[in-house]
Image (cartoon, rainbow, N blue to C red; front, side, top):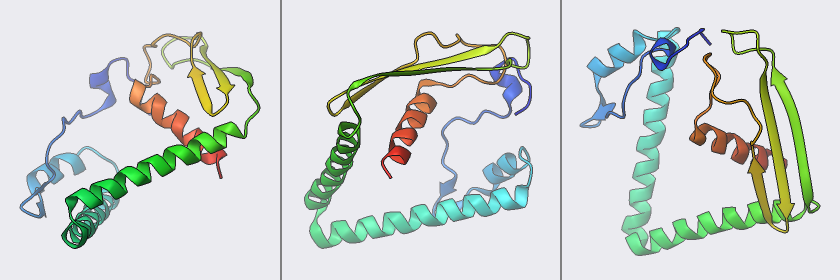
Length: 164
């Protein structure tokens, strides 16, 4: 990760845009993206694979809707979401109730010599888990900050890995 002290120093920022138009990748946009990454050939292949998988997924979903109807497809989607939630609650329920914590620190944020404290407290109660990062370092100048979505994804990932 490059040493940046603001979002503009972290690289090209692209708002949500359509990369596929009329079933084909927008070549102008692809040139902009690929001009701003290392390994452009590999990244192009990654984009093509992702686009291909999305097209396949969309086609399969439309087949399900054509066969069963949108309402039934929606019900099955809701069942899958509820199943996932039930599985997660079951994994959490296996853990002993209590409060668990950990603390560590990164040496620095790359712009100062101050350690970057990471503190987490996890409270398990039945099938619920509350994760609290109170006491962790505040936002730092270096490129280490994580937005809420990244933090939620990381917490969810840890729970999924634990459930295996």
